[in-house]
Length: 294
Image (cartoon, rainbow, N blue to C red; front, side, top):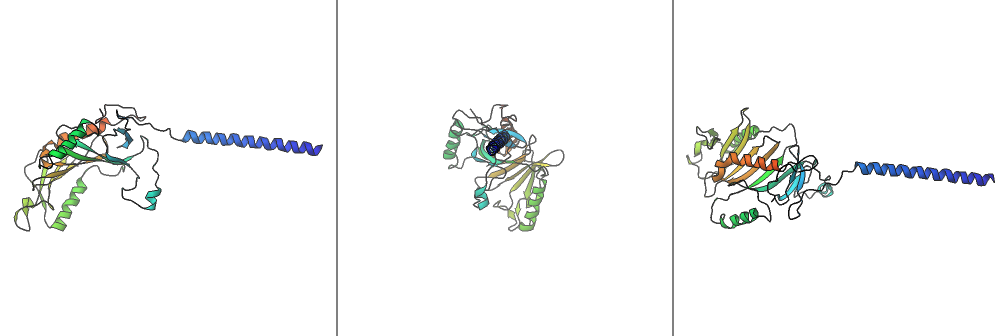
């Protein structure tokens, strides 16, 4: 009788232990579930395309899906052509409004500040201009724009070091200097390669491969905030225009036909406004009408 009682007692104790263990497992599972981030549902456009979201310059953003040219890259993403095993095993963290963006691109129209959006009228305009203007050598009003996020707090937000490096490289490799010209161009300080003379021929430059025009703009503190390099020969003369935005730590790179250089200030202002229109609240609520979304 005692042995039966002992057996029942052991079975009851074992059942209690299993019950307690199960409760503990349920508690741990509940805690883990609570720790998991709530899935983010991005905004959509009228075609059902989801916005690309993330953090840009320390601010949460929601970028219309039809606007992004190619795709949005995030900090930590492998390179496009990285075929290493490490890249193949890479798993991006869940995309939230706190995940830092690395870079993305879009098409900007210099004549009126419009943003090209797929399946909208602006895409038709872009394709038409490609078909009609480029073959005829006429100015193409669109500029491919890339936005680079700056996440390193120690990175200088100016081009002073970049300009000094470029000038030193030119002097070392090409054996000539740049000289600041007395007259500004559209309010930009103008640096000309060897005062416009090719040192190898002692004649005016016939090409601008090694010595493009350099145009810069400084703020009151002497920081170069705008850095532009332009062709000055050939039928089609292009500019690469880089600038910082005061409202957030990002750097913009845009390339366009030199005929639109006169619009450099308005271009910077418009692109800053475009980015600002994509800023949302921490929870993703829209604040302004998004540029590029109808």
